[in-house]
Image (cartoon, rainbow, N blue to C red):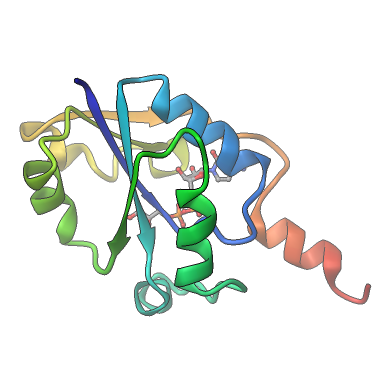
Length: 129
Ligand code: C2G
């Protein structure tokens, strides 16, 4: 049983998020997703449109996702990897290199993102609508 772990805000769920969850799930047998809480989003300088509860419900409903946990801070990744016996930590290549320090606990992978879509782009396209 190969366990995969990732994290993200997943606001205004879009095809880039879906492609990423599909790619992540294809790496193993069980996908755990840490969804950023509203408080942690503030630390990341992000103000999401949907609340944590709404973003959690949407990600939880996705057929590629087996478990959603709250992402409350930058430090929890190590303990999550140990607690959930994670084999691979993976995230979009926009984070390339940022989590290499986790490789003493599990494999670390950076996956291709989907071009030309982002929550920011969606928000901008809706301005003035
Ligand atoms: N993503 C993607 N393609 C896009 C947009 C996002 O593949 N066009 C991926 C990101 O690379 C990430 C996941 O979807 O792996 C979630 O993206 P965000 O919600 O933007 O999450 P982020 O702000 O990167 O939070 O501790 C890690 C952070 O919580 C990650």
